[in-house]
Image 1 (cartoon, rainbow, N blue to C red):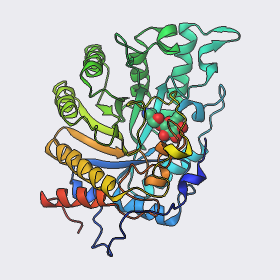
Image 2 (image 1 turned 60 degrees about the vertical axis):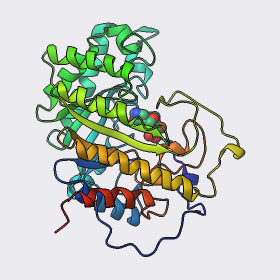
Image 3 (image 1 turned 90 degrees about the vertical axis):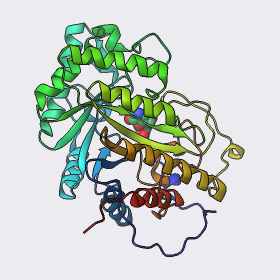
Image 4 (image 1 turned 180 degrees about the horizontal axis):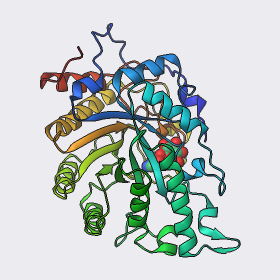
Length: 375
Ligand code: 9MR
């Protein structure tokens, strides 16, 4: 896994120095019972986090997504050699600290090693691919049986753009039913774990319709699906509030829970609204506009938009079962290095783990609607 030490530093922040905060309410407490509030952490816990980061994590969140450890490329880099030591430590840490663990992810066309799809120099047969999927899913899900709250079973399977499914080695070799197969395998390996379909831009009408089709087909086939994960990699000033609301209602109408699974609000322009890791864009130093800190005016807009987003989530708390941020604080966000190197400020906490005004706006708004206060 790439580490990005530069992004973990503390670039001079132009953010206003705020007065000593009043009691900092945990996000998990203000959002209220019934909705998990999570975040993704890259690297094995507890070693990957400084003590101040660990404190921040345990104060605000009650769910944790290992950002990369459980992806097939990390979990089984070569056939039959499972690499789960860091994942074991992370799951143990999470359990000891009352964080529900979200398994991310079982099958994804990215970060899935080539050997999965090959047989010597030729393509693997359908039977071989399915056997490998079963072995992988059975081993990984089975190892954490009873310890992982829910799994992103299939990630990003809807084409962008396209008629229906994304064209990947999975569908090329095993056909469209490969998605249902993966869900069945996961359910067999841990019948109590929740199972999710997770993708980006699926709130947008065209991709939403195709996602609804996939979910309906899975449900009609009798496959267990508990929730759909809307990733939520959004851009400042372009949060699709109306589409999101319509998507939450439409997915929920299928009888599914909805989760915002990889939330961040990018403040630096980027050419692509999606979250496709294969996209790359070169940022020059001049394009790295917020390397000295993020201007107050931008942070204010971000705060307003985060508050509006959480207000929407609050209003649909009967349908939304989890909101997870993609990173703990600005210094630990993938948006510092995707789609190219730049300094980003997309989360609720700054690089020094201090709450930003976006945190205040969200916490104040939620609190004003009668959240449960910590005892
Ligand atoms: O944040 C993750 C980054 O550290 C990895 O390098 C990258 C490739 O594995 O994946 C990032 O997370 C992605 C997630 O797994 C699936 N949805 C899109 C996320 C951002 O690319």
